[in-house]
Length: 151
Image 1 (cartoon, rainbow, N blue to C red):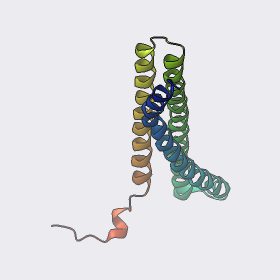
Image 2: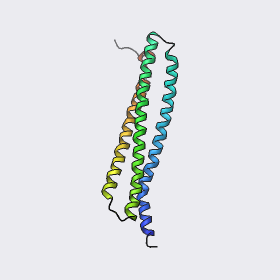
Image 3: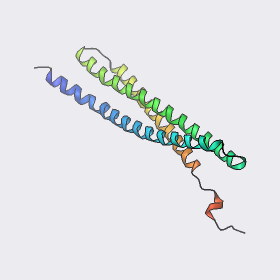
Image 4: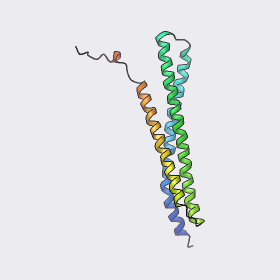
């Protein structure tokens, strides 16, 4: 069984990308939860929209626009994560193909893995933008804070 050490070494080499897949899955779970809450909020706002007028109507429209941007950002981040996960899965497959078909795929493996990392970082940046938009929407107006005014 001369191939056993080679198989073990290939599996060890494929473990790091496999752990990255777990991290991507957890991140997708987080984004899916956020998306669910944002969609629920958008439905609530849409129900309230028709019965409002004046400044209340304007505030609802502003929030609906903010929620729409957040839904778009989360959707794009999830897409990038799915593509990153596919890239990592392809890397794992290529590691085994390289070893057992005796091909030199190192350059392609490095390129696909780098692409997957770029997609992951891009998804993280979109997540950061979405979180910033969410916190911007949650800012409490100064009138409610009753801050002391300096003369």
